[in-house]
Image (cartoon, helix red, strand yellow):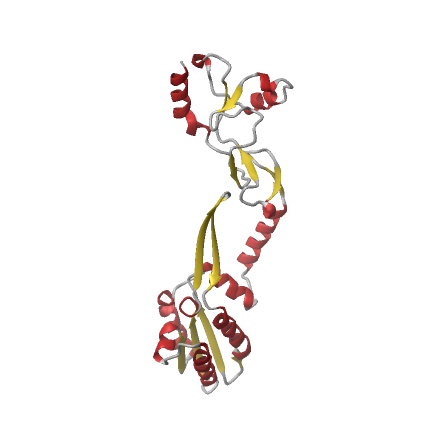
Length: 256
């Protein structure tokens, strides 16, 4: 679970008392400011020095505030496929140095304990830290991974476009569909009625003369054989056909 440093302070206090910790060091942005560590060389020099101090005590605890030290850049953009969000590390070198130091400095003997704790709120930062450290997963996490893997490799049928797909390949824009109902525009407007029965619609679409029936989608007013006017991911939930009832009523009145 991701947590801020302040969220974890009571737990750190209990741990320090339980393990009889005699040296605590906090790495965060304030630590760098207090030591006038503004350029990369000075930052690494201070961090190396504090890591060496850990080994001088029988029981020591290093707390690394990952959000404060490494940070995450969040970039949002719009495309034809919809909004996208991307993440990147603000300080990748400092992140890599910290991971390397943790992997090489953790020690546990009968006479010496060096504990290192990562405090991290950002889920992106937390996940890449866990991956870099080969973080051991809990039985619950392993079970969840197995469920997700099974879900990703199971063939499904999209409720919107009726295409088969795998969740692992399900990308934004993969599904092209109409989110409105069909109606027979060739009839008089007062006789227009929404076609919502799936069996009836599939039967109509299978008719070789379907283009002669004057069927249109209320969402875009294109004919029944037109390509979907909406793009999204495939899903198992379908869509709400009632969203266009007001438009349908207004269109009937305008055509009378």
